Image (cartoon, rainbow, N blue to C red; front, side, top):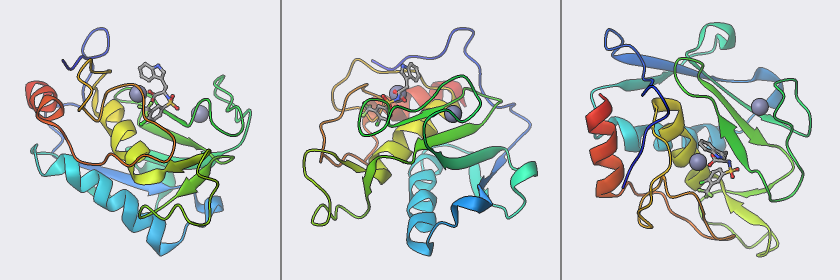
Length: 169
Ligand code: TQI
Ligand code: ZN
Ligand code: ZN
């Protein structure tokens, strides 16, 4: 079953569009940017909020960046595996990913060690759930279930995720 953060924080009902932006220093490929776009779409399909990329990082509601180790928010990353990413609950909108992971895209595990490969889209869909205000789910099928096996891909929202987000928005 889905859960929320204490106090059930969410983005204000007055907002029907959230903007997101990528840390310019990361210089992400078009491939990776569209992967995040698809991850946002999976949520917008089942709720009334829409997500739009903006080039002005400072003004974006959701700020996405890859960082290694200590990056100034008191939640240092830890190298390969362990913590993969973290997101801060609404209305903070910070979405940080561990730059030291062996991120794979489009299920392409060929060039990564199968023991440490992490599917970027799976983690993106999960973290966007946190950004929107969902906590973890006890339902194994759910995107918000708190574990994923290395090398596994899980990008489809389960009914449990959809019921959770529809209760919040
Ligand atoms: N990062 C944790 C997560 O996003 C951070 C975290 C720990 C957390 N406890 C929390 C966030 C309680 C909100 C509430 O869950 S992680 C997975 C999964 C992580 C883990 O790096 O461990 C995914 C990030 F579910 F696969 F285990 C993304 Cl998909
Ligand atoms: Zn961080
Ligand atoms: Zn989580």
